[in-house]
Length: 127
Image 1: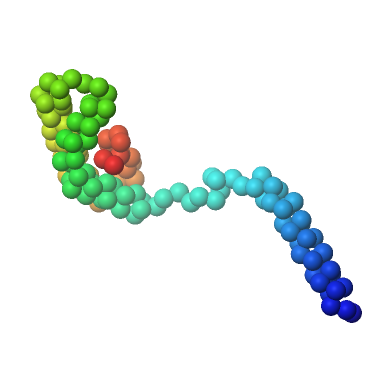
Image 2: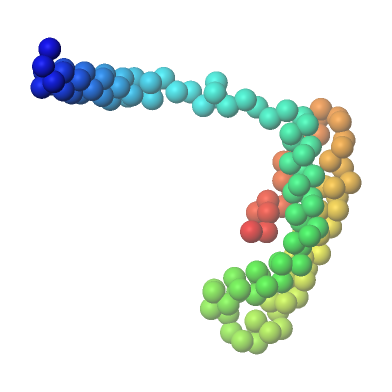
């Protein structure tokens, strides 16, 4: 076989291979069911998530003050509101977030299967 015919045969083989792959991709994509593919988190993973969320809320609870001020500034609140009211709201939210973090850190080891490991605050994390 000459080198030209070998190149032609290999080119045709590559084109056919790509065509088979491209036409089979939609079939594979249609058969995807996320409920079957994604395994539900175990109790240990839920506990670790609760521990991490609690630690994050304890360490970053103070950040509610500047985040609240920024949100109120972005909403177009007047200067008097930003200086007088926004810090009080931020401090209140910081206290709530930090105390929720303490609660989650203290109760992450609870092994009762009826315990809900969902986040208490929304958003779950400050950032």
